Length: 196
Image 1 (cartoon, rainbow, N blue to C red):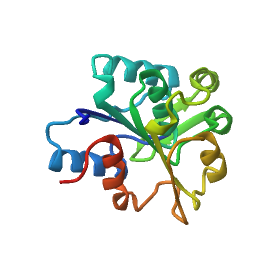
Image 2 (image 1 turned 30 degrees about the horizontal axis):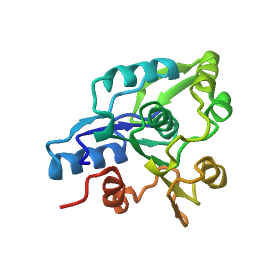
Image 3 (image 1 turned 120 degrees about the vertical axis):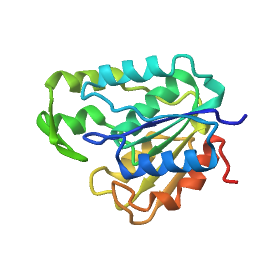
Image 4 (image 1 turned 60 degrees about the horizontal axis):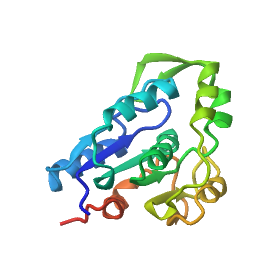
């Protein structure tokens, strides 16, 4: 069934201005203008972020929607996929988000707007724990794109999180997956948007 709605979830300290989000937005506008595209600016609170997302996609058709998430957005995308049953692609996903972000409590700056500051509160770590989900009910509906060269997250942990899911394990690479444009056609095809 053709995809009609696509959600993109950015990572920690990131924004809809990330290179990957802009690349997906441009490709959708260019080749799939009929697809409803949404890449919200996620608030620092994980609970608030998921409330925003779930309210925003409440009316979306589950069988014709997909989600792409990078890093912390991959953690969120996994949650969305479990809750909705939709297809998902996660890029260098945060697997143990509560554990890893506990060391980032305090004032942070946004990657794409250093003038924008936010405070990552201790309670946000607990909110991340609440969002953790067990094994995927439909692992075949999630594609994990993982770079062995990720300097932030351990690729072995990422691979281990998604048993039964197709995994594209890349030699080298980096956390931002700087060559994401090379993988974009395959990502969109997995979600149901083959290139034309």
